[in-house]
Image (cartoon, rainbow, N blue to C red; front, side, top):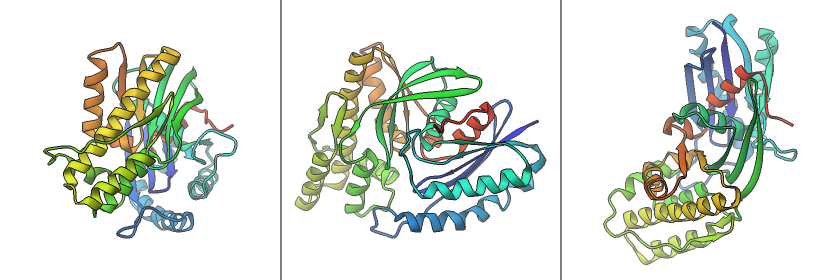
Length: 320
């Protein structure tokens, strides 16, 4: 059976994955990049260095269980988004490794993007087949965008992505990380903030800023910093951050639906892992409207190479 290798080197995760002809996941290996305590991220040069160190560790046992001769195609993320000027040095590490492997194994190399990998992993793991035209909300530490997605071809898959909205300042993950780190949580702060919020008794109230299909988190982030300085309960601040994200996304989703009348929304990205955000949004919107909210499986919401592997099987990358 033919196998498909995916490689992704995002700003915070080195990952490789293998799927087969039937889209079964054979291997999924990831290593988070290390951020110093109190830090809010990594310089690109440091991230590149850590990716280079991580690859021998990820590949150490990968081919012990998989016959290299069964690898049919390699898919690799070469930039953040399928846009001409999209670029980050970290993706050059994954591309270089993929090029060497493809040449060594004498197999095709499919170049795709990090965002398309997220979308593919979301489609594959959300539990429901998506129609050809849908909305997607990509919410993470490095991207917070509203997308209109069209699948013009299924085999091979070809995404046509139109960015129709997004944040005007902080990304959703940055909002969470800045508040979380200020409260003493380690970076990335999402999982710990979610756990902390479960202890909340009286959630703090946050303002939201939504203008049509654009929104802002700088005001809420400043509000959170003031609450921290005043000595407000950290659990109540954490739940307030989650509620702020929910209220922002709820208003945004309604605005998007009013614009294009597409009722399906696919959520991808690390922030979409948050169980409270997922369940609350679905309860509010699916119980009162015709909207359908679909979420990538939490395991595949955050950065991973599974989408790149699946795209490799389709025989068509999204770089243009």
